[in-house]
Amino acid sequence: MHVNADFSRSVIVAPHQYQWVSSPQNGVERVMLDRLGEETGRATSIVRYAPASNFPRHLHPGGEEILVLSGTFSEGGEHYPAGWYMRNPPGSSHQPSSDNGAIIFVKLWQMPPEESGRVRIDTRDPGLWHRQGSREVCPLFSSDTEHVSLQRLSPGEIVFAEPVDSAELLLLSGSVVAGELHCERGGWIRLPAGRYSELAAGAQGATFYLKTGHLTNATLVA
Image (cartoon, rainbow, N blue to C red; front, side, top):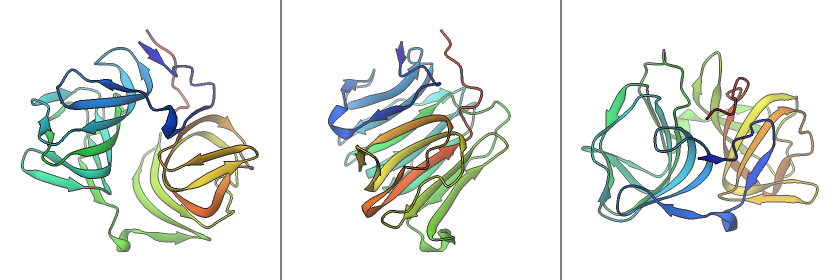
């Protein structure tokens, strides 16, 4: 299965374009933002857990990255409300569930095999946010191949002052605009290498998940 699998092209998925499809587990649905392969392929998704839904324990050979968007997401006896960021490295396993329901942003099979650290960050902690120029940034992960953060911009502030080698944004609040483009909360944007000097926070500002650098070597594979 290929969904938005040409990484040389820009992609924007607005919330009104979400197409919820059932997962192999009852009570769990997802929006496929991009995908290469079937259940074991590279994938970026919005996943919705109904109350009292769960997955049996399973492995993640290619790793898993999660940002909890709403509700409370659980792994075994650990519970993560909205705002928690997680990385489960390649070869890890877990048993995810949600007692009261949850929506999460998930990336699968996108970590190098040598990554071994388990990451748990509560982005609601104001002590984790730092000012960088006129914006606020909550660092989440950094390596030679990718940089992940949450960023909070003032109205009209430019998202990228310099060219980027690749970027991916998920709007958490506010909006970003560029000419006639207006992407609001829940919108997902994937950009190949280039200059995007017109992309700016909207009239209410913007808070978004941002990952850069990770698509440099991405290719479409069967």
